[in-house]
Image (tube, rainbow, N blue to C red):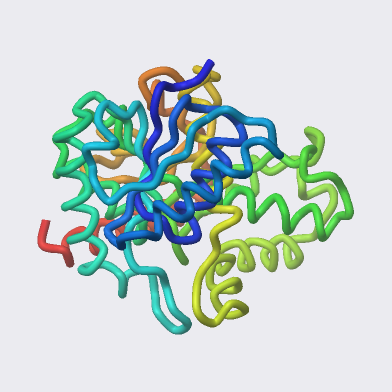
Amino acid sequence: MSANKITVVGAGHVGASCAQRLAEKELAREVVLIDIVEGIPQGKGLDQWESAPVEGFDSLVIGSNDYADAKDSDIFIVTAGIARKPGMSRDDLLKTNAGIVESVSKEIARVAPDSIIIMVSNPLDVMSYVALKATGFPRERVIGMAGVLDTARYRSFIALELDVSVEDIQALVLGGHGDTMVPLVSYTTIAGIPITQFLDSDRIEALLERTRKGGAEIVAHLKTGSAYYAPSAAAVQMTEAIVKNKRRILPCAAYLEGEFGYEGIFLGVPCKLGEGGLQEIIQVELTEDEGKALENSARAVRETIEALGH
């Protein structure tokens, strides 16, 4: 199973990595890489297509500056916007990226009114909200990529700590994408065994803190950019679940309409992804501490939306 066309908006590190992964997994017959800078998407798209004979994929990759080439795309992965720099919070990006995402979203609605949007641009939860409002799409077709990445970081840190396979670690990270994210210790297991049987509370808390600061840790190393290998892998995992109707339950930023007691905001929650996009939001029981942490996260997202003037 594959889509006819998937478009990645933004040909920076995250976008280009997404396009390459989409092509290698043959998730679409055609992968379009769009950017406002002339030459960059064309060059990267051609370079990726030239890897096809070596990697053995037939998904055509093209680069463009024109949304006409994205016409009737099934899915858009939106990575457009400026990246974080050292010392810059995700919310510092707010106004600049909101303008970019609003413009992109209107183009998407114009050329592909039935498409699904996977939002990657930061601040993630608010950019998803901007896209939802700008397109007028139903909530099933605008989903934010945050929880898959945050959960992957959490799982990778646990694997390092315990010297076990990442494949055996099941976890959920909910809430906003940022310092208020909520890793759920009560749902963290290694081969079905609760993490509390492996680590004491201090070690677990250290892992949670490293997870919350996972993006900033990479920014501090890179100095002039932010993460892209793991974010692109996460966005493509969501795309694959939708294209192949896998009905995977993944933590994603979804527009809440009363779930978990919240409405009118995007927040990371367990989502079933498959044909049509968001098929269901899975409500899970939270401990008292987790519930309070999610409330704090929701408040932070709402404040950011208000700061935008929406």
